[in-house]
Amino acid sequence: MRNTLKIAISLPKEDFYQLEQIRKKLGIGRSGIIDKAIRFWLRHRRQEELIKRYQEGYGKKPESIQEIEAFEKASAEAFNEEGLQ
Image (cartoon, rainbow, N blue to C red; front, side, top):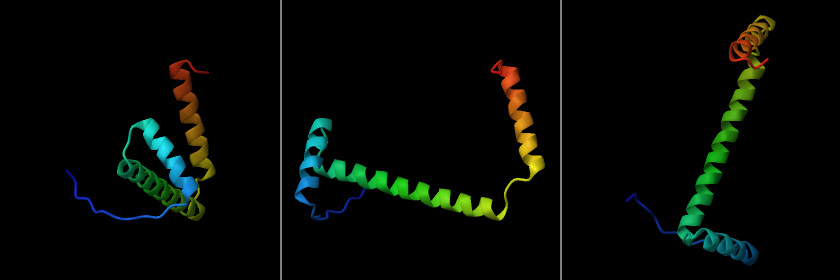
């Protein structure tokens, strides 16, 4: 079993009732549904950070015309080999 900590949170009533409906439908306890929501949010936040870093890096060093042409040629060849023209 992983290490856990107990916390208390406050939610608007409307959010609480929606959460209760969802968790009951899924057969998940309150801690479980909050854990899933937090993990989802953390993954989403990490993905946003990675996209931002990628965009910043691409802005500093985008592909050259030669690289783009090479990617296009390789893609066309792969499609031809798979019969996906």
